[in-house]
Length: 251
Image 1 (tube, rainbow, N blue to C red):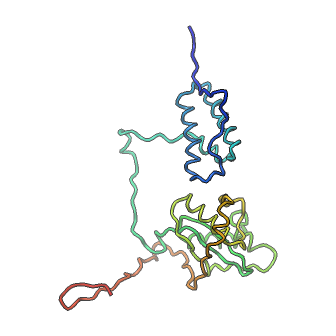
Image 2 (tube, rainbow, N blue to C red):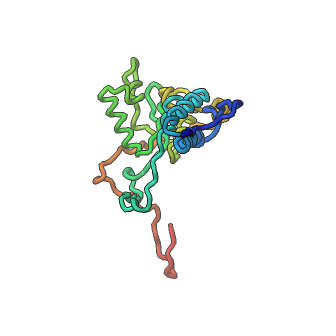
Image 3 (cartoon, rainbow, N blue to C red):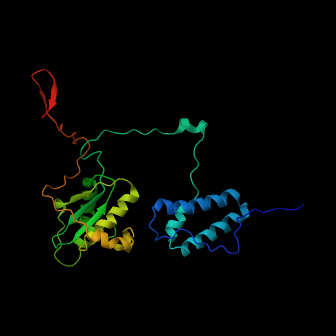
């Protein structure tokens, strides 16, 4: 009895050229290409050939500029969507109203140092929470966890001016925040960020970015994080006054 094994077929002229890592496309598109090919391998390949195909994809995307971490994450099996019978086990989400210093989310922030250099950071949490972590890292000497702590404890006169921290962008979404952080780092050549931790920005954008203005330092400091029980909603931004005819107008 004949046995048939199914695997991915490639023409002899196939070059394994896919969307390059340095291509100016959204990161989700690049990850989607790797994930789609991995999903194809799991769907059509026999069990004996799945790992062989995944190894081929790993080598191909290494040659296209991707690193091991990115490829490993994209090649990982995708989570299966629950069917109708499993819907009752799903935990529903609740969305809280905006409360200052509690439910706010920020994007890119800037921390100055007394030596004249700055740190550009990004977070999806409140600025108070992130500043508290930076301060704790400085106090405990945890330089491996924070570039701010590493700079503060370096030889020389370095006083991190946490009170002058400024939020310079409120970009939402993980990848847009990484791109905006990279843009701001390029606009601040006096930064002390760790280069290996920043998003790679293609050099083709550098001339245009260099012509943009750097956000001016504001005078009002960023408030530190408050415990939830102490946080209060912000006061109304408008006052109301009765018109002579009984209507209501904003003043």
